[in-house]
Image 1 (spheres, rainbow, N blue to C red):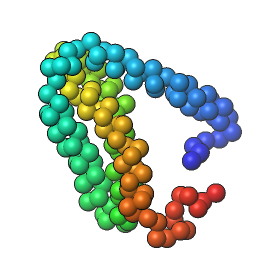
Image 2: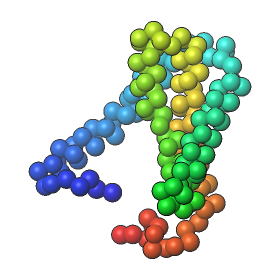
Image 3: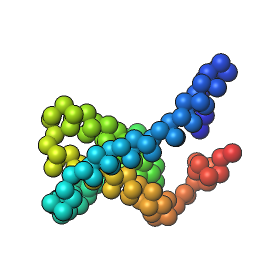
Length: 147
């Protein structure tokens, strides 16, 4: 999907998009290396799994419940839920700021970084599952048929 910008903005937008694709993985590596400096053996993995499940379920239920209000189908709602799970980058930015401001303890930071990375990693398989579970019943509305 292209941005609705005038011709004068096409080149800067393209340049920033390419730069973003290069720098986003760097940010994940920096956040991950910060988290790796903490003792992983002491992490309560059951708590991380529960936090991740709550994060995924809340996005899914929120999207699914809000879809009828916006006149959208269940398929659209589930696809939106799958895409909302990818919010890991935003969470990492906020977590990093919270840690540097002294709001988050090292242990809490580590748990939340693990949840953000795990939920972001689950987004792709969840989206694939959603598209298989909720097939398109109106081909004229599906993205794959638009060109």
